[in-house]
Length: 425
Ligand SMILES: [Zn+2]
Image (cartoon, rainbow, N blue to C red; front, side, top):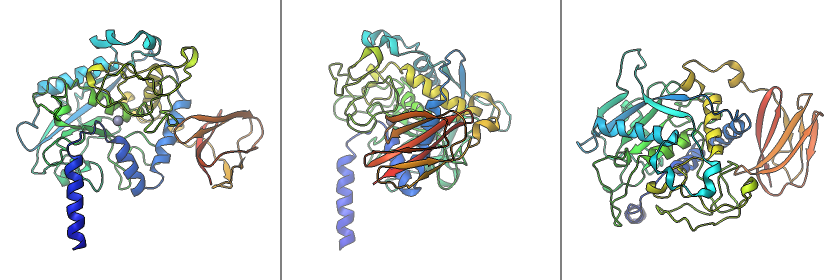
């Protein structure tokens, strides 16, 4: 009886939330992944901080990412035409190179902090076996919707053994799977992506990690997609920016509201903070949090940013801080993607070790075993805000007066950057 009741309640819950469309499920997928593999979020954070501190701020080199689009379909509508795929790649290139015509709509107040990422995309011309390819695969499947409530993801689509298709070598290609993730016949999530992480076996594909890449709901792919989604308020005007958003996650970006209120942030210095996501709106009157962005001071909420949940028709830019982060991820974590060769050992190796005790701590912690020489030590809060910073030539320091919470202690010196997690109880 209990299980029947539970099943019924679960069914009711699914029925009500199925009416809601989630623009992106990356955050939820990551939370679920942390439950399955404790330490996963820490490894993602470590990658983020390291990339942040190794930003070159060089935007002169154009990076081109080879893309393979896997169309996995079980009816004709899902088997998107080549013209839709070509359009999506074109939209990605326009948006990432800031050549999109709608940049004219950007408010003056943001003009100095947005720009070209000098990152572009091309459908792969050579497959993993060295043969010519269109960069598109098509797989007919008998699998129904790929969204799985127990795992919070659609990972089945990433394997031939579960009705999808195996990735192409994830070090060399950005894999984008396009499939159906609907619930009870309605689109439920529009996409999710795997951010870079610091695990030793990166890039992933192993049992304790998600398979690397981006997954997009088939109707949300491209700006000329013939399939219409109407959540009851009129058809959603897709501009190919669900993919721009998910590729942003794949290149290390977080949501601009930091998946929390004004106390959370995205760890990028020039994105105005927001207390919540936009809800498919273009509300330019919002200024939900007080920011301090250099000489610009407090800025309104940036609904024009691809990493918000605003309507795709009002998104048109990345900030320069986001650009620097994505480029640093390519230079430090997704190196082979843009260089075609494995990263030099110096990029992959842990630069040095240090000790930190006690951990968990009561607010005071000793950092010991730091290499001799000039060390910059920075304490970050859980969502990326800098809490404390110092430089020292000693190999031991003590940090006091930390409030209860989760921190990341980062040490930078000539050898490189190492970040460790600290819990204060
Ligand atoms: Zn997202």
